[in-house]
Image: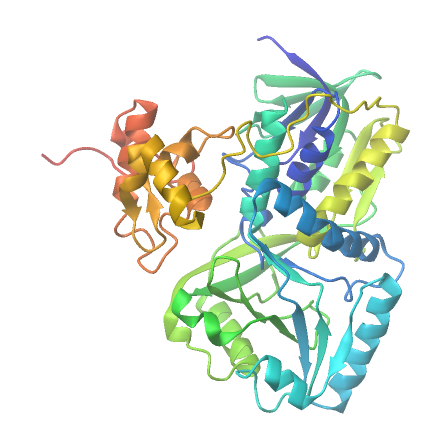
Length: 484
């Protein structure tokens, strides 16, 4: 089998790997992204709180603190450039007693040391004016106006599409199982498939430690899989909260939150429980009870009868408590980007720049591309029908009549949106891929009305039988055969 050679290979297409590819794509460097899953954002990025943290929580002087604050500052420009929904809604950490107040003051001082702007402590009157539904027992809050919300997988898709548009090659279902190093190049195997590169960025998330062992390198800490469960409420509940609201944190982390999403829902969660398997994304009755109780501490009147779906994600918690971004001491040009737990999403833009600096110091020549395309695609077309104004909708329908055919009524997704998703730089060729790119199936009925229609469009566009259409992975068939 032939082997393709690259300057840089990135292992993992979560937000860290995808954002790094996005930054490198600005330069005349040949890059490959190797992803074990079937799509971008297949792991932790697919299921998290979607919060762009301000940076007051990370301990002073840590890499996490530095990159969180810088990444949060970079996020508005990147999302604007790529047409990604981003909202600087601000965050509140609420307190109920004098002990909580002391903790909030410490968080504020830590945040100021880290460089977070605009932090202040609110009194009870100020808090309830900003958030009328918050528990009447809450007496204080740390307010961080720079915090925001973003859709994590939409951001990952956006930076990945831009990277692909600018020449980055993506390899999916490429689970690296062996690495060889001859002193100059790395050969990365996935079964009988292989890719060669001068430099490697290990951004494998939960599996970053396993990749490190393939080059006989041990990370100076352990990766602990910690599962967080969530509930998503219907858009009818959007008035529940205007800001991302936390309670005073504990040793497990930032705790359960109630927050709006950029798509107009309310998200509740997560808990934080260590699990045996890195792939354990199961939702439990006990877990949902735990986050329900936590949500009612924040907003006692929250309508949990409006939950439209539940899900869970697993985060790669390092025992060191900090991000680890370093070139291997044993293998030159092999860079570990490890322990990127929360606030990994907020930190991603800054993490990617940090990695680029390491690459340059390691010897990679990086010259700016003259023909760099700054948008997601060459034509810049990334708007969905529901995002368009009336003039844009008329133009879209005039150009392609499929934009006049509604597929998902809950989220106003048209056939034109679905077809566009299938034919974008990183194709959506399963029902769930289309779902995450267009929101078809993310509404109140959770796909009961549109799932079959989406499958039919995929089959038609890819010229395959509908029985070949998958829900997400290769082993998730929607249909087994015809009944008549």
